[in-house]
Image 1 (tube, rainbow over the protein chains, first blue to last red):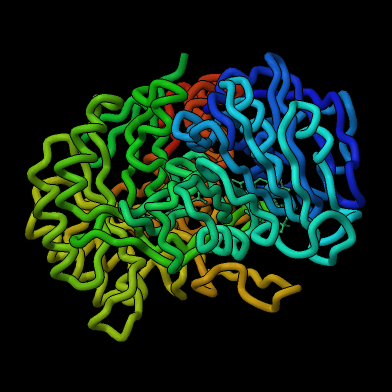
Image 2: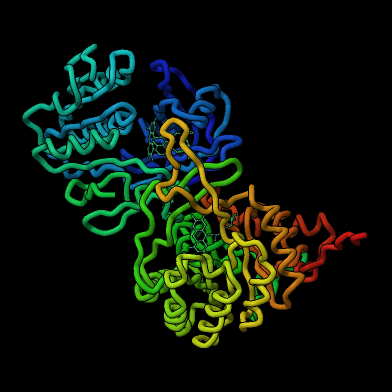
Length: 244
Length: 308
Ligand SMILES: Cc1cc2nc3c(=O)[nH]c(=O)nc-3n(C[C@H](O)[C@H](O)[C@H](O)COP(=O)(O)OP(=O)(O)OC[C@H]3O[C@@H](n4cnc5c(N)ncnc54)[C@H](O)[C@@H]3O)c2cc1C
Ligand SMILES: Cc1cc2nc3c(=O)[nH]c(=O)nc-3n(C[C@H](O)[C@H](O)[C@H](O)COP(=O)(O)O)c2cc1C
Ligand code: FES
């Protein structure tokens, strides 16, 4: 984990309420795909956790949806503004166990952490298939980015306005070596019940600190109590307990 | 440079800045960021007799200038704290730590304190009496003088280490409770714990926190905390540790003027993990600005207005 001041280089809308934000600064603490950053905003007490979409040697990019006061405030910031950010939070996905044909499943704003993951997997010579679910055509984002790096992409929309009609679980291929997923909890549960291999699931929880100090984000797992922010957000399929 | 050291129940601290229980874990996360030996000491996560998972999530809610938490005293239990956490902690903090103890019966408190009394790393026992008393209809021990007395006396009988009773602000007369603890043998008082609070998610018409209510803390409660520290410090002759909403060196000085011998910092650590280090760094300049040569000399130094 590192704390740093980052300069916004872009904050552009991708859909009506989803934005791509790129921050320039010291990103050396980000060591794995699936990690997140925690952004401080003026006038708000707690930081806002957002997954890493992509990194370069001097920048980190995230994709966020405007859902409340913090993300709304963030959406009004412009290039040149600065933000206080904690980087390198969470365990992230482990790519070493993926096999040759990993399946990446994302729903809505659960899609972002899969992009840097796909890039890492491709760099390791693997062939990821990505299945993304959205409510409707107007909410789709990031598909072109995944295709541009050579990932095989399938899109499902709940209302059938684009791609496969239905949920991500209606659009899964039959042949894959391992699963990586992130999305709303009902989607994660459906994926858990449907997939035939092992996998890694990324969870969300309301956070106090985001770095393991407050026990605000704990969950029960097969291997004991875990903090979503520090021991997660990624849990292995075998350790997940769905009861609260 | 001015003198920052203070004496807390007979033990010297190099400065009065102490991370508050539950906001600093066992120190490791912070030791990754800076050398936590710059701190006076720190108060460990609340420890209970048995391991506890705590409350269901969500446990955290954002508030104006603060937060609500309903962690519910998640901790591995006193046996594992002694077997695992304290030895690990030794690698990142060389001084004496404050063990924060919670319980749900008088016997729980006595048992946990007796176990911690044997640990040489533990300098002080900070006894959190804000917990519900399972034998007393769930009312917190800290809300009536008789149960606060019972806990204090039971713990004092089990330990030679200084016992600091940590009070809940959710009472009508905090002074009477502080005095009862002093009379029962407490070596110090720390205050305040979190203020009972609530938030509602308007869209879902549900409380944000799964426990419905939780403990409110952060800068918003500073004036409330300062007032209680002032009242208690003027009513007892044992040392008082002030906390509640402290975020900067000026807040520390204000708490000390109100009567605090040392000052704990809670929620601010969660937002900016460097808060305590920065306060220690900023204190000398703040002291110079206000003409303070020794922090211990300003304890209780507020010159109250004469009431007419
Ligand atoms: C590990 C992690 C990664 C995330 N990655 C992304 C991402 O890549 N893109 C994205 O759009 N969103 C992501 N989120 C969700 C994002 O954190 C929330 O949407 C955001 O905090 C909402 O803030 P707000 O002030 O706009 O909303 P408000 O509802 O006003 O926020 C009030 C409080 O609730 C918290 N909160 C609200 N919704 C959530 C939520 N879903 N999860 C956790 N805390 C929440 C806020 O942080 C804040 O403390 C992630 C959450 C977590 C825990
Ligand atoms: C997440 C969190 C967990 C806490 N856990 C404990 C605890 O285990 N024991 C305790 O005595 N106080 C606990 N507290 C209370 C703090 O130690 C402190 O008394 C209170 O938060 C007021 O200080 P602040 O406004 O600086 O946060 C906790 C506070 C927070 C925010
Ligand atoms: S949010 Fe504080 S421990 Fe996870």
